[in-house]
Image 1 (tube, rainbow, N blue to C red):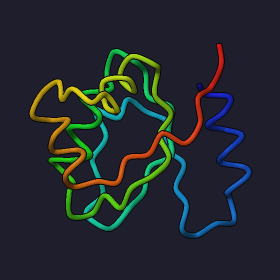
Image 2: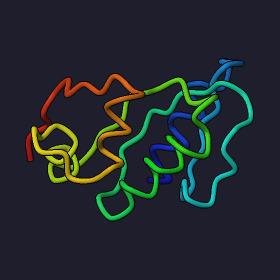
Image 3: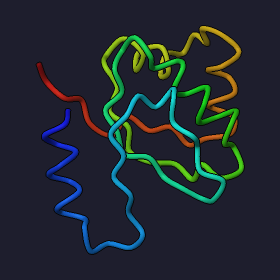
Length: 103
């Protein structure tokens, strides 16, 4: 959403500790320093993005606030563990369902 990116860049223009990046995260060079992510992730690439955050940047990824669509959220918070990745996510990170956004 280019309009949102521009709005956020203006809003945080004076913040030295905030960098607003608008790109396909799969092509983004993950920082080599501690960082957090605030994002709304498209359904089709949720798994790709989580794998990058968890495996390519485990030492530096401090967490964040990430909005997910219902389907991946249900898998993450299901009592049934769907695959080894969900086990990993729950082992190393404190995942919380904070709020359910309506349609």
